[in-house]
Length: 598
Image 1 (cartoon, rainbow, N blue to C red):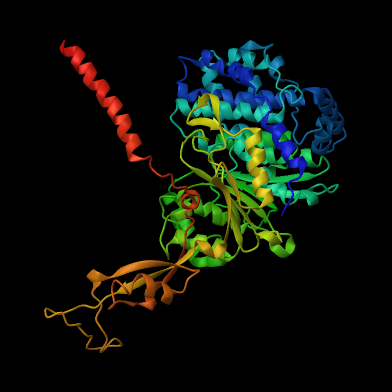
Image 2 (image 1 turned 180 degrees about the vertical axis):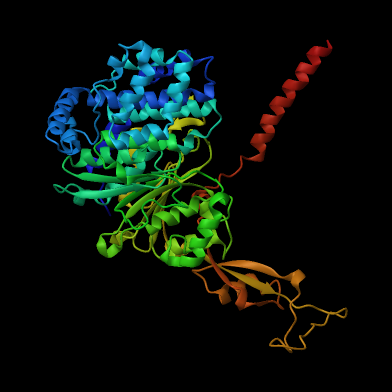
């Protein structure tokens, strides 16, 4: 049994109660009033998001601006490359060499577009890339032509977004709230860009809990990776969590993101946190892996649910066929309509070998990867690889209506190649679907949230690794890996002639043997825990004495019927009780009809 450290539980409570920043979001959103008429609602984000990032960077650099300019002058006159000195003077991993900032830009209204471009160009290269991803220069031109650039700049210059005023966690919440609202206005999928913070906190808690002792050592350095990084929420929460457990620890963050706006926000967030932004890549992780040879200690991911991968099918199939297990997709390929399991295999390929310390990762998936696909299918083969290699630690069922863009059931898979001894050969299933509280106000499809107490309870259930019931219902169950495996056997019966005699084959290997009747052919799933012969004798032979098994067609499959394991039968109410209720209703209706006829 693993004891749950108090550091983990208290950290979850503190973070889950972090105050939101609705006033700041509302203030930034009020810029939309200026844009109305010249911009469609769906385009507001093209202005508001980059300006929010710009003001954030502007505020971060403000205290050291004078020192940076002094250093620039000094090193330039000395004929030296000023960059390392500017970074040191800025006390950040970025800098700006312009004498301008958003406030001083307001002093020259007639030349604000020209001066704003000059100010942007004076940032260090990593920051310039952020605004290129936003295509911000196009919006500067458009705002200038509409006579709005000065007004919008003035609006943002009045708010203080320095980290001492608005923490990194609060800023992340602001960005997520803005993206959600813009996505709703443009009918986009907000959930593709970020994950609810309480879901991330739960995943991070569970991810780190078994390593608490190692993570509290002075100067410990660990790596974490998110292949669907969004705005960087998962990486940020992981960093905050480790800092609470051990302020001397360092978490090196890596990520990749497909959406340009989300990538830009993630990169800006990493810059302010002092992370190496060269570790954050843009592009499609599945078709163009930005970190092909890198392995990680921890990984987190919330890939898009049920999204087809037809656009990148050619590249993925080529890697599967040409590289096999030397590539990322050796176990198999899921159907093109849902690429979730491609991300699971991608993460498996990024695991540090067990001999080098191993890895652990958490991934959010919908219900489909648990059971879609019969024996021999791509999905089943992927599950088979994970279970037969003893990589699955646990699956946690989350409440419905937890995500911004969907109300469907979701599950967190915890995967590791360094399982503690008690977990070896076993999988824990945790049903946390009832652990939620109603939100005061719905956000898109999100009507429920997990509070600090729920996160702590689930963390305790995982850490304890015991079978547990609550209110008479199971909430934690433990299975051997092979409990999810089965053999699909093909049951044949003989073809018969008009007289009812068995037709025998006249040639080939089957000569003299009964010819199978394809119309009578059937399949049966036999649990791996039972021999095929015993199952066949018990379940088939009594009903079809002439049947036999075609062993050449036998396939091994794996599925995880999560809900079946937690189903509790509720007997129907007594018939007399139902009849009595119906009589009361019927009598009332008869009485009402009688009153109407009077």
